[in-house]
Length: 76
Image (tube, rainbow, N blue to C red):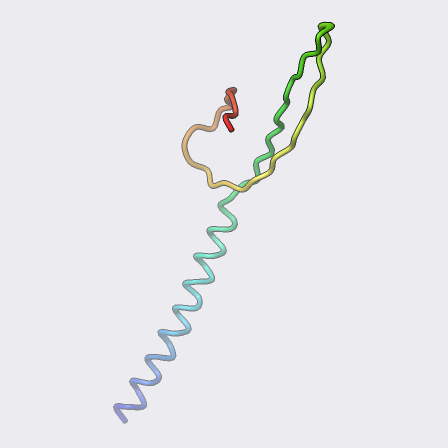
């Protein structure tokens, strides 16, 4: 009788663990937002004109830190 109750308890723990993992995964995925960044490079020519090259980047992030836009340089 004791063995039967122990095995039943382990089964409940496994179900709870699976539900817990599912909830953690769902909350992690739903907490992320998509960010779109467009990088514009300017290349000047000898006659004073310039050519622009644009590259679009996309990524997923979790909301944390500053939520304002920023401007800066990309260092390679």
